[in-house]
Image 1 (cartoon, one colour):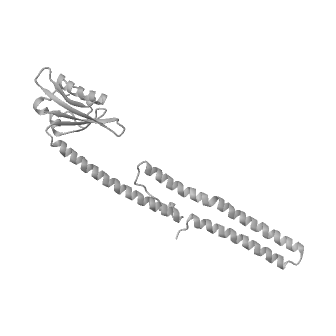
Image 2: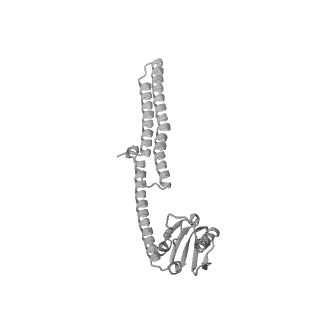
Image 3: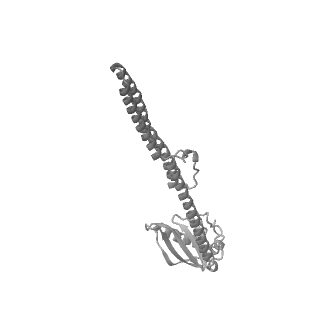
Length: 252
């Protein structure tokens, strides 16, 4: 079994205590077996010098080695936690970096277990989000009205089949600000949508009429806001697009 930092520290304390006890025993033996004062002084000086050096070495090890090992091991753990905080859950743990200490091994195993739980939770959450997304898409695709979902800067996030058939040139890769229209009807229609996005206004029964033909389109729009109340996008419902917008080939 690998030793923990605490066990190593206790071992060094025991070694230091054993050195002190051995020094004391040798000093007592020297006193008991001394034949003359000069020989006693010489023996005691030798014993004290040797054991002072041994105690000094032991203290140096205690002062530097254990903190160094702790700092090195905890730095590795701290770096891993930093990567996790940045969203990287698929980490490669090198077991050779932690096989020297039992406590760090247990910490790494706990960290790996936590990551496994996070990954499993994220996978379940992603599956649930995808499932809800599919439900919403299917619900929107069943509507007879044209549905347009955009970000607050005009990027098209989603449009249903009714909208795609009426405006085949607009897709999820389009931005409404970049579209160019030939006729006033479509220009007024999307200018109204862009104005709602720009000023964060909801649209309720806004009717856009063709000044030349007999086309008229009703727009309902709702701005989507985050928890801070800042607009992040919008959902627009265009009523009777197919019936009232026969020719949409004027989009560039």
